Length: 578
Figure 1 (tube, one colour):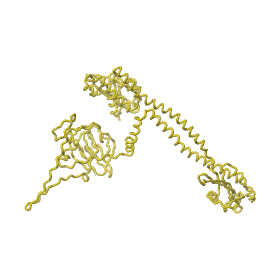
Figure 2 (figure 1 turned 45 degrees about the horizontal axis):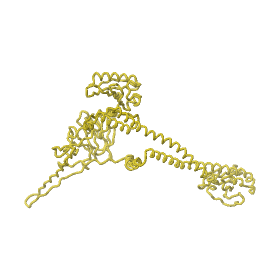
Figure 3 (figure 1 turned 90 degrees about the horizontal axis):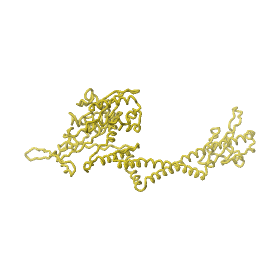
Figure 4 (figure 1 turned 30 degrees about the vertical axis):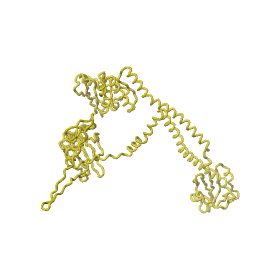
């Protein structure tokens, strides 16, 4: 099965085998694995082990449970995943019975007078890594190891450096698992299997889209957009012929059934008196045959199915499925005989003195040609052309709107860059809600900032420069609670969607505006009081409480100082009281 290996903390290096079912992790209580850390709850989380998978569930712990740096409530875990409980990091490894073994080879020396002596071979020394090139890391006297930067993402526990966890900074494993010491190395985790949606997305991005992107080199953007619109127009127009054809066929079948039944009923009513009086020579179906679409019309006897009218077919046996169905059901019926023919029958009842009831004795039968109702080809082509013209008209309108929509932000950004270069400004702003374009605007602002604030030294101009708008935006996005950033002029510099929802406002309405434009008067007063207190005591975190309609929130304010020790901005967060 699987095991848990502790990588940090006082229990680092210990391995615990997981049992099938529930495994509780915590500081005490009924925990199966007790972890020595004050930041871990008594019952922190539990891992459910099944035959083919593992699932970790957080037990409403104080400091949360993280898998690969992401805070979770419940999640699937696999071999190689890093699980963090406050400041203790663990990883999932195979159980000892399936863990790869590495038994050192032995040499056997023997003589005639001596016992056999086994000498284990010395494990091969791990080769030193090559000397770093110019600009790389300098060599260090630790066996040739060189530092590898650890990705700073996820929770604080995952941001701890390898030396603090007692791990080899090169190979990323604890010393007791160093292959150079003769122990078996932990196999690298298998690459996670991609889901169907991920596979499709990778195929589209790596196979399909490169060909689409190449069109931008061959044609102009407007030509590509026009081509896509026309493909859409023609495709929708001609594909719409399929449901239209099905609808026409269904309509023709319903109309043919209605007409065939009506003609069969008319034949029965017209010849009813002659049949009742036994004057079979007076029977006629000629009027029915004159109706458009009628292929055949005749009258049969119910008992044997022989035709009694018209005169030129008297005595013949008409054994088609409709006749058999009519004789069995003894009621008006209809059915489709083939692709273009539909049949309908109507019973002619005669009084039976033996039963005292009217029983069918004859049936009038009509065969109708469904294709006679089809729309001719000229009308179909005319309909398709009209649909194509209407779709093309609206397609051209969409093309015009899309082309202008794509052109607008680029044109506006170019104008603002020209203006910034003339006025020596380091700020551009385009109110266009598209993340990729907003990243471009941020990059342009960074470049302008370097141009105007980089100084005369070329080496200084290459150093990262401050871009507060990007920093503030990234800061509030990392905060899960409603958050807003104010500058020293009390203008809103950044806010996250949670604050927009709580304050019932929008980014466009308050960005670069005074916080007093917020519609919630109580919130404005709380922010004003907290900012005033933060100006007086910038090194302290200030808090207050504000009631809303259905809950209360704790409001926190922290001042951020510039290089001169003066408040530069204020970060305000609201935390709902549970």
